[in-house]
Image (cartoon, rainbow, N blue to C red; front, side):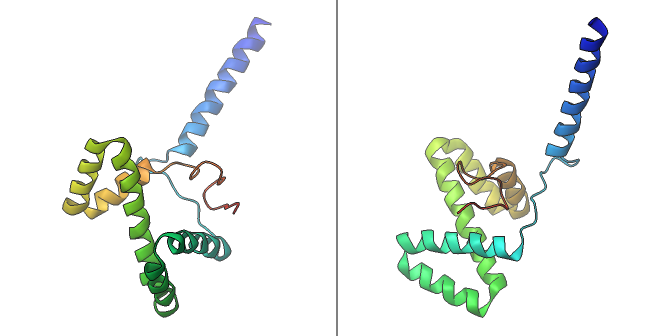
Length: 135
């Protein structure tokens, strides 16, 4: 019985180590799952609908940009999402917000990495796993 428990403890420890390696790859940055074109379209549609409820003019500009230049559209959505994330951080941690704004000005690449570290693994509550939208 003692050996069974010890074997189980060793297996649990090894499994936990493997899961930790999967969760945090070498280099310290999580890998985001690749979205299918359909998932990307669904995500963009949800973002556009959210923007439409708050800023009709920006919504129209983004829809036109999506038709004209999809890469520029995606870049603009990314900027909007980063700004929203910064605003959420500002409400909870003013000091961290100031550090992030300064980092964005000083080193945009490091800013991107830092935001990726702060981003929740599975998206917001109720959305399921990133890359697998439920809405």
